[in-house]
Image 1 (cartoon, rainbow, N blue to C red):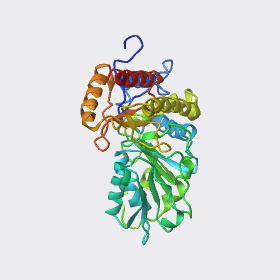
Image 2: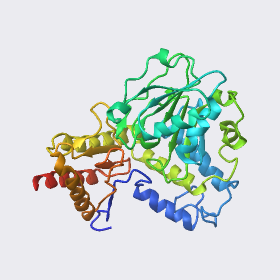
Image 3: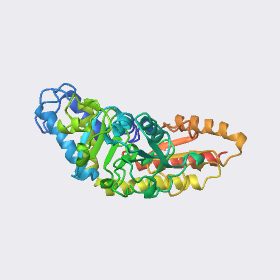
Image 4: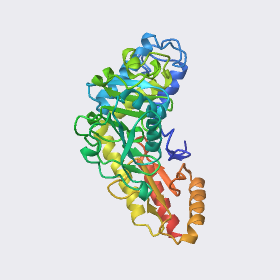
Length: 380
């Protein structure tokens, strides 16, 4: 650290920035885990978090404590079972259709980009699948209008990706599915970013490495009545939600370190004022950056107003003369990196730039980026 400023402003889309206090407490636990996970005055257990048994009392206190915080901090209702799984959101692309598909029924999906496409592909390999809405025609620069109930009536479930990291789009609110069709949400890249109506989803899943912790842990919450649903075909034991619900995320050896860090992040969120305070801060950060980009003569946000993500801001040099865009982009990234702005290169699907400003990303870092963008343009 230098004068309170990090050596690099970490704009990575994930694995992403974590709160300094979480890093400190996790580092302490690597040396020796304490009875309640981190308090320095608590007695140590004599082992590192990397060494303790997942069947031990100290670890059970961690995983059950994390589960309780998911309900209390994120707002997942008690009607849903919380699970800490492995395999990332990518494994959920398979587990969802395996567990929720019913015989003689199709699965409905909304296509909002790369990750929803991968989920759709896995579903298509397992049975009838319908894409009932999407924004591919405009390179996923917006969230499509939520489909009418008759387009998914009779479906086993309706799946949406609520925040699209690559394209910088986000559902302004979790929609409500009609006709008793279970709504499934992939909310990986904005879990805990603001208050959300998570109770509207019958099942939700999120890779932890954006807003909730390190890579290697996947948060899943599933409505308890769905755990009894009989799938359309054979499901391997390990890929059944019921397996992990029955053995509360302890069927096999979990990512013990990752679950500890997730618990520490949730505690930090609680201590920061919860989702209301965090959401207000995220709104300020995003608004400040979008205002600079909207008023630029060179840069242009990729996502349309009304669909813009608070977590992943994407933009290009689209307002510059076409012949200059490639050179300007390279110049911008080179100068940004030299000044300590790391991870700003956009995904190849959009090009340009992406600033991921997750919960732990400080407002000072957004202010510094805005100043750099303004000064870069002024000097052209």
